[in-house]
Length: 392
Picture 1 (tube, one colour):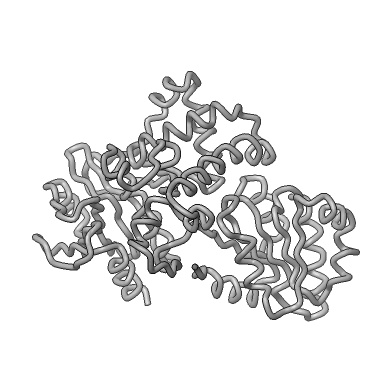
Picture 2 (cartoon, one colour):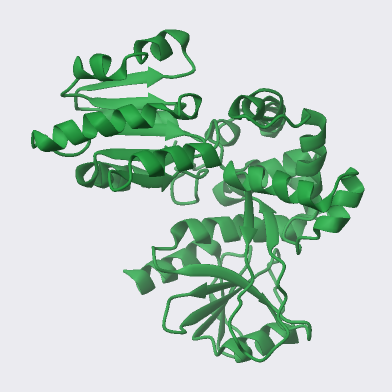
């Protein structure tokens, strides 16, 4: 059904680093990917949520020496952050013996504590990769409209491959409940599940809008600083994206607040009780849902050295997504959930402000054709191809 594009990148990183960390929310496919990478080579898998496996690593140096010539996969490592100090000693000993890279493949949720512990203990010895949901280029589905199905159900593999829309919707509702009631408390924060559920749902309602912390705080009955703390948590867990505004000097009054997106479109629909595509078509979130889905897909395809922003001024100039390639080279991307997209004056004003090199509209249709002011209207997959041609 799908083959993850990250596979070859992880294999290459293991050849260059003693340890590689795959970060991502639960159920995104980290374990499946790790087992795929481990095929054809000696390996051992340890799930640190399993008490028996956890007990094996009470003396990690001794146990791991018994498997010195194997790739060691450590799953749910956020349960044992102190393990990184032990891994450092093992890695350094192997280096002195000239035994090279590719020793540890570590899987975990991207909490601040995990990143801090690993980066401090394994500086210069570790590489991080982020696994997101399925992308349009990873699915091999010949039934119906795969892109529409992926947008509706989101990129969690079990949600995408569910028997029907009802089963997929129920899977996502169960995922949300389990994450709030079990997973987040295990990671440390003691926030009532009902409070976080309300907050997550609020973020879905304001998908793609400017962050208004005081308004969210008023609705939730908390202080603005608490909203910032909740948002930081959801961003750390790779469940929410904060898209920052472009902040260069164009002598304009620029918007300074970020936009927030629930990163998985399927979770947006589950939080808003949208069970199927027909219901989505009649829902006010339609445009912002497509916008978030497209932005997440594009950002995942960006090579290192490029930076995504949005652009907006108080005068009404606005671009949904600005891609900065360096040396003041910009692409402007407007996103429309329509098969007959139209552009507002504010888009062209913004393109003039930034003197963008190329202008695109990513829409829900299938054809590619030119529009006014040297703008190209095209499907999402075709835009990604343009991006790949640009970056090699």
